[in-house]
Length: 399
Image 1 (cartoon, rainbow, N blue to C red):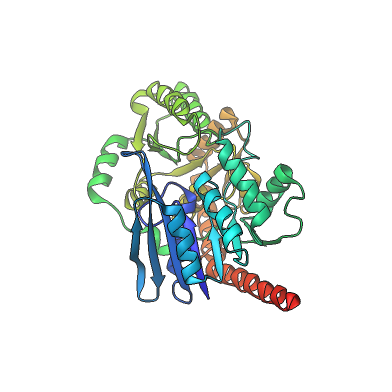
Image 2: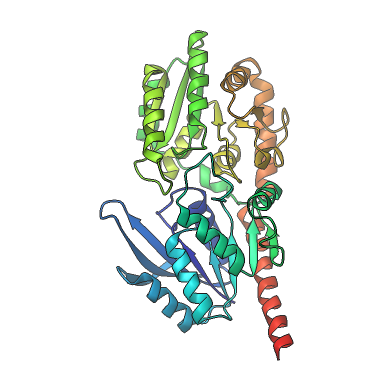
């Protein structure tokens, strides 16, 4: 079976959860599939997009095949025609993806398409400001793809709320994001020394790692920190993930809002830019608890990764998390957008250290058992096999 991934995130180019999924999936599936990746890369420095074609197989994690500094849409179409892939798998909703798939539908109408939904731009209206082109592409993919992949039941509910019956005749697969236990061990000694010096003497160190965009709820995390400061609690906060580029609109005004709030916390908070995986692991080792404060998510790695690393989790009570973990068994929940409730939950980390530690251990065991990439990879493979078999049945019916 030959499959082509078309994605904006791959290898070192990780902007969020999609990049983690594509990397984890290629690492697993290259053992058994002929897998190519058409990576569309955006350069903030040059304000331009280019593309690279990689081959992932048992012998190579990502062998560079070709680079396309321009005409990436046309070159992608040429690649699809030449390689005759069994499936194309799409992970992003973007105007360039729209152009590629629109041409695929016209020029290679027999091509089967799988669309993985890691965000629903239309559903996010009122919370996150997405370009209209993202919504247009999203709707087109829902219409043209033969197989739709959602992460969980709550994502399916959100998709229905946004689009109704537009995909009623599609095959829908439910497959969660995956993790690998060994990904959270390696540390950065110099970085660790630097951060530990800044939190030395604190009774509790609370961490939040997130993209700084609307819907991530970082303002509620900072407001909760302010509440605990006023109470005189000896707590240090770490907020990581700041970067000066994002695909959403008006992200810069949100970044300024968070910067302003963080400055008011003074020495009680450490603000970090986007951290690499080893720095992330180091922060997991240093902190006593992790806060996932989002008001909008689908199946965030900002919950999966700290849990996999054994860090106690405090999460907003979003359906995508409550369907996975249980209150007072795997983690602590707070009412979404409620900073007072979040502050109360952070206090519980101090007051109930032993029970919180037990919850974290149970959550990690559950996650590593049910969400390991080896298991998730098998589910993707089953989805691909079904999609290919369905196309064969359709062909026989036509004949």
